[in-house]
Image (cartoon, rainbow, N blue to C red; front, side):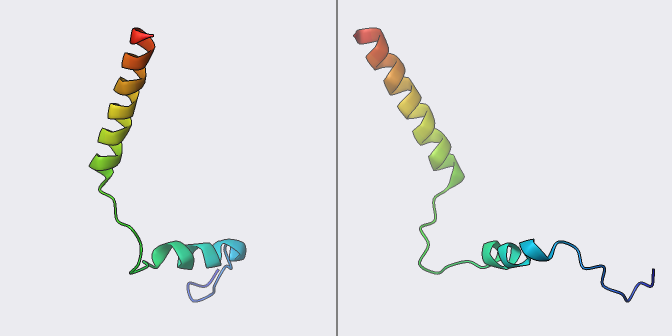
Length: 53
């Protein structure tokens, strides 16, 4: 196949790639470390509440 030819690929995912590549200026940005820390804290809280009751 010639290098210049387009093989087509997955045409159904083309819109998704464009959607996820764009960044919204109004989006809420959360640090991934904050998400992990919050998850750990919620897990510890659940364990403590289970232990107490």
